[in-house]
Length: 308
Image (cartoon, rainbow, N blue to C red; front, side):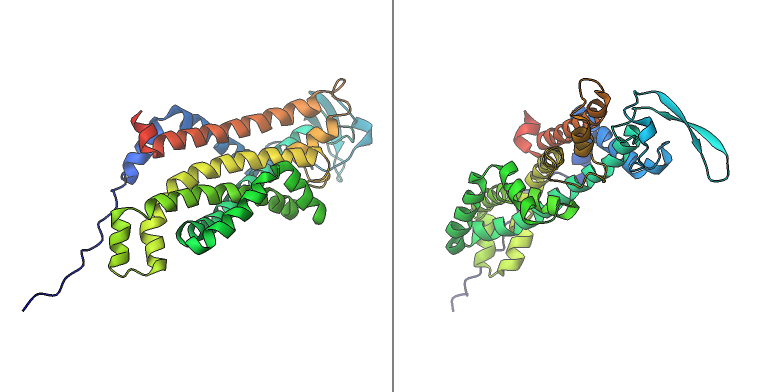
């Protein structure tokens, strides 16, 4: 009596580096340390804004319009007491404190960066998994994504914002739409390569259901590339938000963002450059830190880059 043929158990994927090893590599990478430290500092500035010597960033005071950095004025409270407040970064054309607006603006910029990166990756991951594994839908999905990528991202964002009322949600949606095709292409390319691996084919022969196959064998291979992709999306989101606000079609002017502050001061840049200089420095440092963190994560998480 011949024995019934038995299916081989799925071969495990190549073991990933332990979490402690990856953490040790990250801590040894100066690019990651510098980028992460600057981002952490910006996040703390946004969270602790009320306790960093700020005042109401929307308070208008026509008597102190366009004051240079270091200007001091006396503030009288309701009980009659007076305090001397120093405008560290000067005031804008409406008399608002630039320092307070820059500090509070970190909240909006970082919120947009995290929201756009998280939502774009979540949506792009699902679509990319479907496109890469279900061949019948691959052509339709990718032609639609190619159509979105053919439109310049900033123009597509402007078109989306114009369809809705200007606000935080509409700006986030406008920035997410151009980023989704980029995530889909990354995930799809990973799925197309992983699905041909022997351990995936063995899992299919063993009767592994599609949801379990996706979660256990394919999804883990997309984590490291998506983490790196998310950092670049976050940096791009900060820049696009600043561009939209600078053009006057993004966040409403009363909400302090780095783009709004620079848009407010562009007309008087030659006379009072501090209105653009200080928010520009914060914006540039944040984007640089995000890009440095992304490069460091890529070098650490990619075995080829780490070996080199």
